[in-house]
Length: 206
Image 1 (cartoon, rainbow, N blue to C red):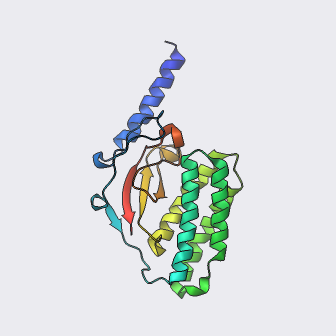
Image 2: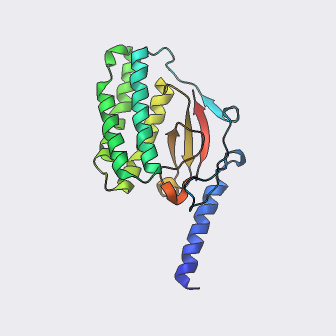
């Protein structure tokens, strides 16, 4: 066996063990890198930390607009899960459009201030995703920060349904990164098919 083959095997093993060591047992999702549709353990909401939304009295029309922004973020997330930069770009464009169309007159003064602070950066990262369909690595680097902004958005205004805060310890050059998901199963947008189920579910936001 050549030194190059041995080195490659060792790197793969170390990456796999790093991901496994950071997952609670009841959140382990499996790590078959060849199988894009692995059997996953479904996490029960009762086993998760629950995060409450700040503004539960949001205007119904405003709430629907926020949900649409979240939907387009999830479009981006799922495209990255599937290693599809073109579709992620489409989601980025749609998210930017949804942010611009929100009727901010429906917010209270405090709500408007929170919305503007969050979405100014969210829109910027969406533009990077939208303009770099051929560079999925660049899209994923901005998705890291986009996800932090989206976490703030759904914690502040809700998402129209329960969503999950997931975390991968190996993303972002092993510094770790989070994302928001509509499903309980871990599907990693930072590695896609390479390590589809690397990560853990941290909390549910209701």
